[in-house]
Image 1: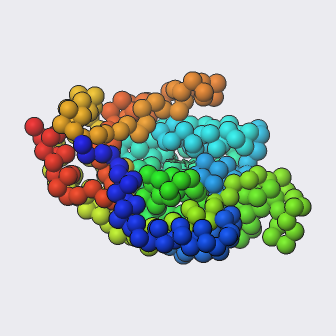
Image 2 (image 1 turned 90 degrees about the horizontal axis):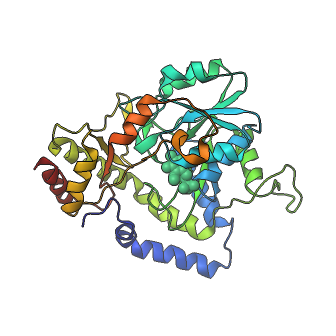
Image 3 (image 1 turned 135 degrees about the vertical axis):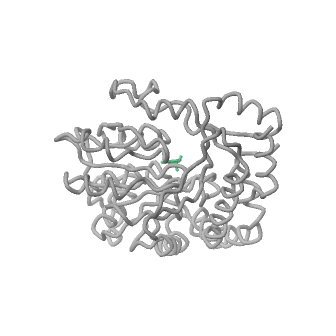
Amino acid sequence: MIPVVDLRAEYVAVKAEIDGAVQRVLESGWYILGKEVAAFESEFAAWCGVSGAVGVGNGTDALHIALRACGVAAGDEVITVAHTAVATAAAIALTGATPVFVDIDPATYTLDPARLAAAITPRTKAVIPVHIYGHPADLGGILPIARAAGLRVIEDCAQAHGAEWQGKRVGGFADLACFSFYPTKNLGALGDGGAVVGNDPALLERVRLLREYGWPPHNRYVSQIEGMNSRLDEMQAAILRVKLAHLDGWNEHRRTLAGVYAAHLPDSVVKPVERPDCRHVYHLYVVRSPERDNLREKLRAAGVATGIHYPVPIHQQAAYYHLSLTSLPVTEQAAGEILSLPMHSTLTVEQIEWVCSVMQD
Ligand SMILES: Cc1ncc(COP(=O)(O)O)c(C=O)c1O
């Protein structure tokens, strides 16, 4: 069976380094917010090309905390897409604000800037472009509209570690940016983890306070603002430090595999695009076809696992019916046609060629 991702294989590829890092933490006697988290935060910030990073419990918390740091609260609206992990909308709802969905660009599956202005109301406080699948959202279209309307912008980089726009990595273009280190991500922990990154010291300071009950570093146990508990632990930080050193190579390998797909897939499926000025890091390799379900069954029968990210757009999920009745035709059509083919740092060129040959038959 060729899996969509192989988490164990990625661990085995760097086993000695990870085992050493875990042992180091076990022996240290310090397990939450210590040297490993501090070191990871500065190494990850440098890797992203931003001035600071704050490690938190997961990507959903990263978005929730970033929104709160930007002042988003009950009664506000936050614009994003319905074609994303439900986490993006869940994080908005956790602040008490209302998610407002706009449709996507059919080629990149990211927020369509042409739909943005019409969705802005006097209650709109922020926009979350999602760099879905590892391709940057159209920041050149989105940022000027958001800025002109006085909105905060928070990048959802959960699927886009190392993706680039105009030669710079995503994570530094907006007010704040949020990463997930869920195990399947391009940079994945061996448990939960997340980070908020950015270049604005005041916002990053607020994120740091919100992460741990609003406690300032010099006055633990006394809350300066109402915060929460969402700490990255030392074990995950030590593991992430190991994996971060391999991430450039792993992302390059994903791009090589994407090149193999592009060369060998049949013309009957629509392949992912890479816009000029963008670098795609192929967190997921998503093709589309009106024959998606048949294709999926054919691959399954040949021993090739696939996924659908995501089968039901958020505005069509029962938990979010109350939000809006807006129809999002591009999003809805995509959900019925998309198929995630195997893509992971440990898959081989031969495996991808085999997947393509099954699809050619
Ligand atoms: C686009 C997107 N945003 C947010 C998240 C939330 O991350 P986490 O699962 O770490 O909470 C994820 C991952 O699931 C994601 O893919």
